[in-house]
Image (cartoon, rainbow, N blue to C red; front, top):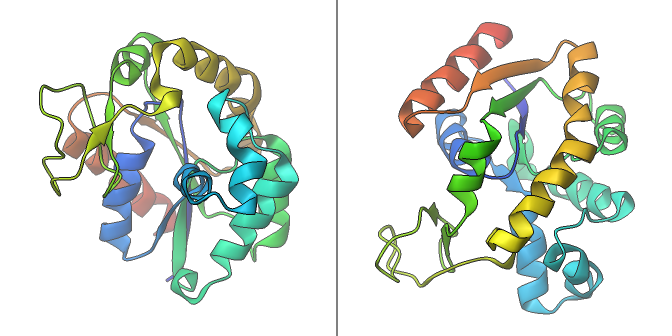
Length: 211
């Protein structure tokens, strides 16, 4: 059975973490457009040069660029049984494009709901591993507890950028929820509490709608 999912929620809502768990649970790839773009910037590729300014300022990457990247990625053999999109779509136009270009579109949209105050607290000072990309709350160590890699704070997790990222989400990405509601594909999940508890809620709702 093919499973095509989208993860939605404000920055810091836990999309990346839940994407990793869902990827293991269903045996399908998690596709993080944010990771793909940051890697392109780090590599200094042509794509990286095109999007670097947008990422540094917390702005959305132009639709035509990100749509082409995603469509190429989901066409690869490892996505034959499905995939999990994390960080895409971010606009209604992007959602329309993926619904149009994919066979039967997306199966379900997992919308993680977390209060704004908690999102701010989660993002301020969180650290990312340069090696395995795992994300952690602020801690005293500079080494990743998972792989031993170096921990650092991403530019878009600086407090000066977080407020802008949330504003961009609310203005441009939140309307996606209404769009997918019209298609009957939204699963609204309480994203607060322990990671394992949130994962149970997510997996339970997906199983219910795909049964």
